[in-house]
Amino acid sequence: MILEPLQYGLGALSGSLVGFTLGLVGGGGSILAVPLMLYVVGVRDPHVAIGTSALAVAANAAIGTINHARSGTVKWRCALMYAGAGIAGAVVGSTAGKAFDGQKLLFLFAVVMVVVGVLMLRDRRAMGDAGAECARENAPKVVGFGLGTGVFSGFFGIGGGFLIVPGLVASTGMPIINAIGSSLVAVTAFGLTTAFNYALSGFVDWPLAFVFIGGGIVGSLLGTRIARRLSGTAGLLTTVFAVLIFVVAAYMLWKSAAAFTAL
Image (cartoon, rainbow, N blue to C red):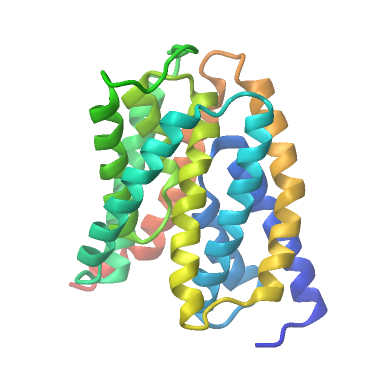
């Protein structure tokens, strides 16, 4: 597929938005990237949009991980435990998800997002334990949440960050700024897994992916910087995260509701 120069420019702009979102709240990248690829950049094949965006999101998440790591907000043991369990769960979830209609999956995923957003707002004043770590005592809980997140991510075939951040908070009690930084490790792992599978089938536009990633580098730096500033205000970053969840969930409910109304 050959794109026009304007489309590559729009790809860079879209990538910066995805990178900013990932750096700020650790989620929303894959949910935003696919629509941007289709409706802003103008990629015609949905499979190419998914495969290319998965690679771009994984790369942008990796860049965001580096930025957060430099700020000391990544808890590596928790991140790796959670990501490892999540990958295993994603294999199970994606296998089960193939038996369901895609639009119905998106609708159900949006419902889950609304529930997560409500729970995050309910606990938005909780600052978390900055010294929280993953040890033998809470390892089963972390692995359990990671496995469950992976199953949901694989089953619905979209997102991940929206579930990973609250999952890390719930399983470890860490502050949301640490959950955001640590979640990017799992987002990177999930994205690379998806991109690899799509690349094997030729569904990755490599030039567009690199342009998208370039824009994401700039956006990620800005998003991470703002996240650090907001983290000191009780509940503000959590509220931003929850509001973004509600906005995206509302859009997904609107786009996928036809799958149920047609019954």
